[in-house]
Each structure stands twice: as C-alpha cells, then as structure tokens.
Image (cartoon, rainbow, N blue to C red):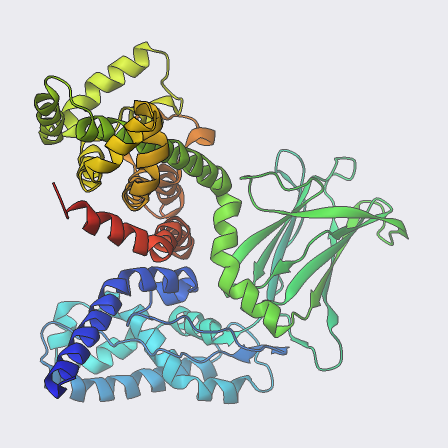
Length: 545
C-alpha cells in the first residue's frame, strides 16, 4: 500500500472519529447531567463531569469548591481594567468577610476548629459572596470613584453566613412538628439556637446524634405524622428516628440518606408510602419495648449510621434515576411504549411486505397507476389528515384507547412499500417461476420464498418504525387522556411540566435528564446492535429496478 493511501485512510478514520464524538456531545452531556447534584447544574462555569462525593467520617467538615465560579464582568469594563480591579475587589471582600465572621453579629457559636477552617475556605467564600452581591450592584456604582468600597459595603451578614453554610457542611436538626390527620400541629419544639449536630464515626458505625422531648398540646388527639426540618451535610449517611409515645416505641422502617446540603422537611408517618404521594418515611411499632415518655409528651431520638463508600457512590449516581420512578409512573410509560412499538412494527412488516410483493411480482391491470397514486400520498402533509382522522376515530368510540396509535400501521406506509418493492425487484424472476412450477400459490410464494430473501429490508423497516413509534409525540397527545395509557414521549413532557420548571417553578433538572436518557438509550442500543442489517437493507435496495 502506498504511503499516500495510508495517510488518506488515517485522515478519513480520524475525521469519522472526530465527527462521532462531536455529534455524541449532546447525549453525553445529558448522561452527565443526570448524575449531577443541583448545585453543579446551575454552576457557572458549566460543570461537564459530575464531582464524586467525599468520604465523610466526621462533621462539620470543609467541602472546597472544585470548580471556582466566574466573577461576572460588568459591561462598562474591558478585560484589562476588570482584571486589575478584580484583584482589589476580591481582597476587599475577603477583608469584609473576615470582619463579619469575627464580629459579635455572627449568629452562631463557633466550634474550636471553625476559625482556622474559615481561613482555609476564604477564597471560596469570597467567590460565593461576590455572586450573591453582584445582582445588587447598580451600573452607577461600577463607575463611581469609590466603587470597590461601595461594593464591599453591600456585603451583609446573611451573605457570609449563606456562603459559610455552603462550604462548612454540617448536619442540622431543626424544628419538630407533631401533627394530626388534618396536618394541624398538636406538638412543637422549635429549632435550638445552634441546630448543628456534630458527629464522628471514629469509634462507632452508629451514633445517637440528638434527642428531643415534645409536650403535646392535645394529648388525647391521635398522632398521624411527624415533620422535622433537616439540613443534610451531603455525606449520604443514613438518618433514622425513634419515637416514644403513649407507652409504645416506634422506629423508622427505612432511613433517609443525607444526600443534599440544603434544608428540607422530612416526614414520618405510621402508614406505608403510597405511590406518587408526598415522600415520607414509615414508623413501625417495636414489639416488646415500652416507652419512657410521660403522659402528654413524646420523645424523639435521631440515629446516624455510617454508609460504606461504595454504597455512597451508588446512592449518588443512581439518585436521579430512582427519583424518576418515584415521582412518575415511568414503568407504565415504558410498557405502553413497548407495546405500541411492537404492534406498529408487526403491522408495518406484514402490510408493507405483502403490498410491495404485489407491486413487484404480480401483474394486474392498473398496477403502475396504483403505485404512482400510492407514492403521491407521501406529498400529503400529516397535518391535513390529522383532524379528519381524529373525528373518524372519535365516532368509532376509540378515543382514549391505543387503537388509533397502531391500527394505521396495518395499512402500510408508502415509503416502506417503495423500499420493499425495490428490494423485491433485485430477486430474479427465474426463482419465482421455478416456485410456481413446483406448485406454490401466490401466498406460499410470498411467505416461503420471498420473505426469507428480504430480511435486510425488513430489518431496516423495523428500525425505522421503532424510531418513529418510540419518539411519536403528537398522536398520543391527541388521542390519550389517561396516565396508564400514556407512552414515554408524552410522559416525559408531563414530567417536565410538573417537575422541570415550566409550571412548577421548580427545577428537577437532573431527574429530567435521567428520564430523557432512559428514553433515548433503547434507540441508541438498537442502532448499535442492528446497524449491519440497517445499512445492508438500505444499500441493497438500490442495486436494481
């Protein structure tokens, strides 16, 4: 082989690899986002690779910023001026932050090692504080002579405390509410002045981290639920509770993982978690154990169990995917989509192969005219027939059923029929004549002779139809009203509406990306495992006829 030929092949393959990686970036970004924590999704600059959780054995602890945020440049400054001012501004903010931390305004008592750890995290705290202050800076402030001093004065105690809580991770157990069936408080203990709960797993794998006694305002009223304000420390350790009430002891059936560093309300109830209900943990009665709580009071103890690091990794990386199945009937969506895909593929393969066989191998009057008429329907936009079809299926009583979503496949598709006809044309007429001489009728000729020879074309049609049905959105949105009949394309849209921030005001973006990845993955796997049949079916179709 000539050197020039080798170089051309290398360039050719390198180009294919680069293009493959380039076009895979959206999918890789979606997979990556499905594994990210909330603060990594809204981070500036963008975080491409999710950060692995730390091995936490004691709390509080420092969680340094792995991806320092950008200091947003004001539009009035050029790069050179902003670079010189940024150094002075950062020094001024750090000095102001230190003054606030050492002042009497600081709302919490400091642990022994907290001041030294605060100094270590100063750069990260200043970055976070600037991000909080920046929206409050007016354009006139940037252009004033004492711009740095005015900006530094805008730094408040709340800004510094918020930043410190972000990097100085700690478990906090705040207020506890005892509620009846109407969710009305019958007992309440407010959060202590310092709700931080330190722990250290050096000597034990399980710790009692807090105990609270709560007086009941209505001792005779039955207790239905317990709500606790908890701030996790992103350690993924397991928090459980034990309740003593009315002479009996109850313990949580399953613990909660401290996966987030944000405040959240954790609910415990005496009933099992219902699907798609507000997430809560379940109390179970401990037989043979009596309560030490007196009349008209409840005692609550919180236990923390160490989580092995492999389990921490699993909980961290699978969290978004488990949340998807918790909040929406994703399994039902997948089953409905699989069923529709199977019916559509079967219908298209049977109808298109049979009609194409008639156009390719049977001779009858008007064959070419009918073939042209069939191809001409490809020029008719689907939007034109959408309303008449809907009226027809509604009068047939098939609205809110799967029937309209697959029955038309048993009538074939013009493009697939054309594809099959071209493939049939590549089969020699001598073979069909020999089969007729051996006594085959037309259906035997189709079923026993022709179909085994056109498997590549059938595989190509199956792949095309799989992609079309799996991604179909408009038709299910029009015809289906019940959740248990909704395919995955519409289900993903409903999930985005309720949890993705369109109408909810929330932002379960990692869960949304996990749901999208689950929808996309089957199509990608199908192509990888069947691309040989797909390419063979498309290329052989054009050899003849």
